[in-house]
Image (tube, rainbow, N blue to C red; front, side, top):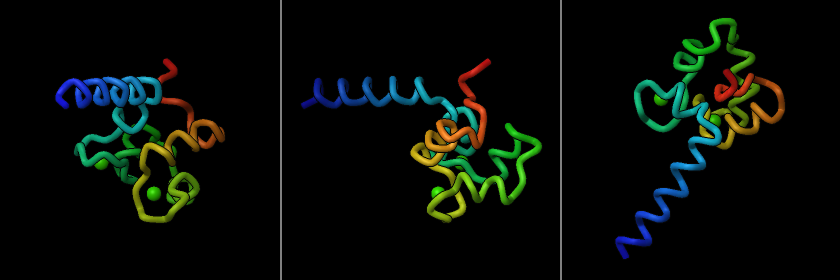
Length: 81
Ligand SMILES: [Ca+2]
Ligand SMILES: [Ca+2]
């Protein structure tokens, strides 16, 4: 049981490392990125720009939305440079 848990955690951590954007921006550690947190990384971000990334409109950007935004070219990948 413990071995399975460790293995699952390792896979999850690798997934985060490949798409580090949320982890890099999530300064309060709640697992999602607010407009304020994203603004700290992208100072030119507008509320409209944030809304385009926050596709389900709940006011925060999760890992899925962040990945989609990167792939769609809405935001530059935080793992570049
Ligand atoms: Ca956060
Ligand atoms: Ca959202």
